[in-house]
Image 1: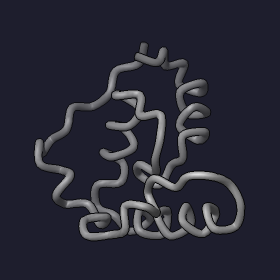
Image 2: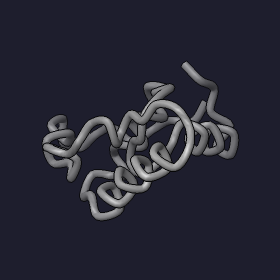
Image 3: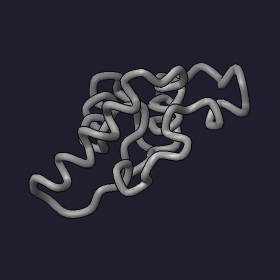
Length: 89
């Protein structure tokens, strides 16, 4: 199992660009154009986020099964895990 860098700032979440954003965009449900639009909005917010890398590492480390974290979808995180050969917790 790969190790993850520890969070340098335990309060990294409050530095996220997603603070105050519509949480529905980060946790879309269903399929289709509306969900695709929600995912695109969330990823756009993550694109300029100063803690995006910490966020995705958190999602990988804690095996988050839903939502957009650090600009990644659950399926993208599964791919990252496979590439890194990470065993899900």
